[in-house]
Image (cartoon, rainbow, N blue to C red; front, top):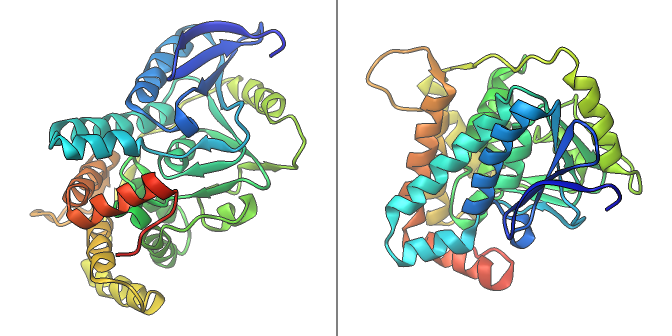
Amino acid sequence: MLNQKTIFHSPDAVHLWHQGDDIAILSFESKANCASPAVLEGIHQTIAEVEKNYQALVIWQPNDKFFCVGADLAAVSQWVKDTNITAISQYLTKFQQTSLLLRYCKIPVIAAVKGYALGGGCELIMHCDQVIVSQTSRIGLVEAAIGLVPSGSGTKEMIVRACKDSNHAVTLLQHFLQISQGLISKDAEQAKSFHYLRHSDLIIAEGVDILAQAKLLAKKLSTNYCPPQKLTIPKMEMTQKEIFIKAYQQKNPQASEYDNFICEQILTIFFPSTKDNKAFFSEEELLTYELNAFMNLVTTPKTIERIQYTLNTGKHLHN
């Protein structure tokens, strides 16, 4: 690429570079740009570097087909086979920390998205200050289809976005149903209606130089930039939980017993069970519920079957 100057390069993980200016560009080099352990570590190294020496960060992939397909399922599958539960928990915790690192970075972070941003890829872009996205990009939290829940801060973030809506309860139900069905948008416009993208995120036509546009946006946002404030998230009334369950059953009349079990795990994040009467949660508290739900699923035989089927075929198994 013209005028490409490397800042640091970790083969099969990340490449951090610039074009002779103060905007750093991060690209992944993993298979299908998945968020492997090495990629997550590379993002942490990137943030430490760019906060000191650059005005903004753009995450951009030279691969037009995949922005990021999400978590490293091959690694997760191997840890399950090895009964290395600690490694799985550490990986998910690192993923959650990475999302928050992007959210609260001292400089603006822009995701320039072309192609698929699925699962963890969707989670990462949702924690950037701004997303600029090609109109044909497909985005979604697909984890339920492979027997898991979005646990890299994605479920938490969909709850946060619902809480910012004037019709909080209705939007929260919409987000719950999307997550429980593992919905992928058909294009960027639909990703906005699903709230994987915000109204402020920018959709551009095919053929437009998305990196150049992202850099212009990064430059603009870097002027007098202030990171967002820490969030508190209101607790949903437990009386609403039954409404969510009935809505799921109506939407998914062909749901299997295991689909219903996955749904129950998602509900533990939307309706956390606490011993006190607290009215608000921190992001970190909700992330604990995300992690617990993921760990309750990842070693079950049916989730293992779903993950292996997806790795072998690229498709989803309904069991």
